Image (cartoon, rainbow, N blue to C red; front, side, top):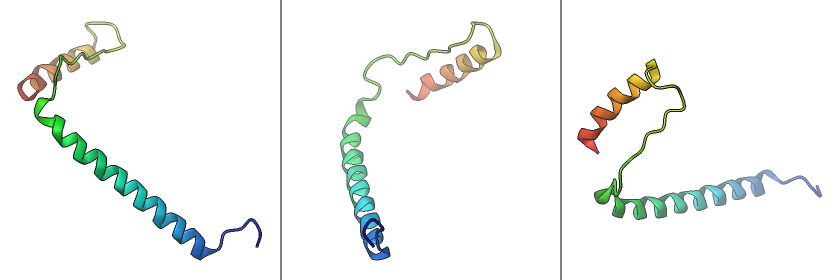
Amino acid sequence: MGGIMRARDMKSAIVALLTVTLMLFLAAYGYAQEDVARFPGKPITCIIPLPPGGPTDLSVRLIAREAEKYL
């Protein structure tokens, strides 16, 4: 049983990994709440890597116009 982890050890490792992941997520969530009131702090630039005037460009322009109301 040298290199093979036992089921009990594997469960402990998974629980530890999930605990650390949850702690990091909660820490990031708490930090993010401070900046929500100030978002966006500067203009948002939307870059479309396709030629202007195409269907993608036109649809993104319509979406951006609607997004201005909320951002």
